[in-house]
Image (cartoon, rainbow, N blue to C red; front, side, top):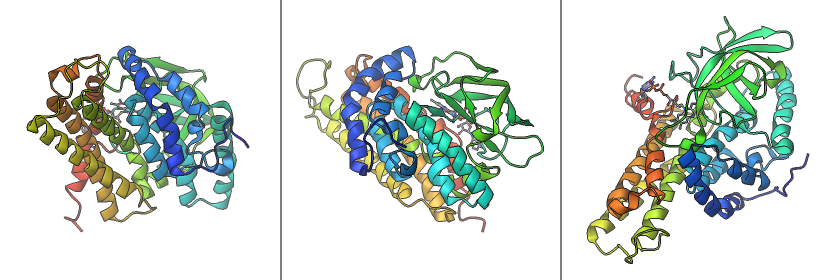
Length: 395
Ligand SMILES: Cc1cc2nc3c(=O)[nH]c(=O)nc-3n(C[C@H](O)[C@H](O)[C@H](O)COP(=O)(O)OP(=O)(O)OC[C@H]3O[C@@H](n4cnc5c(N)ncnc54)[C@H](O)[C@@H]3O)c2cc1C
């Protein structure tokens, strides 16, 4: 199986370099995606052309074969230029990782393993050959539990399932080719992950989308009414999703690199602004000589480097069946990255000053985008804090 792009083998640096080439164009387009709250179609076309849509598709299926840790660096580099592109790219890649790298670590029967390999070959082929874009509408606004409280129902029928339910904040609504939804067969004690073709009958996209930030994610509400999903569209074998969520929960932190990259973008902006080199800033030369600005700029770097160090330390050390210490560090990492994203953006407004947050400059958008990471389940700031608050106290 070959991709349309000469993509193997790539080093991590080469993967990131591909994004860096696209970066300035992504940064320019981010203005319109934010203003009009529209999906970054052009950026995804560029990601496809550069082979990056198949970033996390294993090499044997024609993809780049990036590891989770490689993915994090690529995602962060995208976030540096356009937060909404990074966040939507995350939803796509999370599915590739569930079906690929994570599935390979799980225990399946020989029969389930063979079935999974056949099914994922088709899922990956769609991405590599047809440029299919995947999304992960899991949230229902009902429960924060990654493995509980799914109200979307899958009724077994000949050849597959009929899915009925509602998913809120479905990033890539109207843009994804596949909606990968968590759902439950009544009376089954586990969650299934089914890949619903966006063109299937019975799907509606409802509600408006005029949010504070991350506007290009177009995260509207999806309604599924008796939607037929072929059995072969199951992303993981039965019980595989619960096993993955319990034994490799690190995938729930896959959106943190987007916000780390966004933080880096804020630093990039501040640096050029204080040097008087930002296109569109009020003429008057450099604005760097005041010690208060220098202290703020120093603090921003400390916060960013703290986020970067802890996030990559965790992501470079993920493993199946983590101990409590590693898991606790993962929650600390997510909390730190998400909090620091908004803290650094807020500091940037103070350090650069009032003129820096005028709408014709990107800092204002970055500030709004940076607010949302901490709210995102299943590892929102409060969930991380709640779990950290109990670590080591009860065993
Ligand atoms: C830009 C954006 C894109 C998104 N894209 C997707 C997507 O593609 N797919 C997807 O599945 N979801 C997505 N989400 C949804 C997101 O992950 C959350 O599910 C959603 O923001 C929850 O909103 P809510 O109003 O139901 O908040 P609530 O769940 O009511 O949360 C309100 C507050 O309560 C806290 N809280 C909630 N539950 C717990 C708990 N069990 N323990 C401790 N504290 C808790 C929260 O941290 C928060 O502070 C997206 C969200 C945003 C902002």
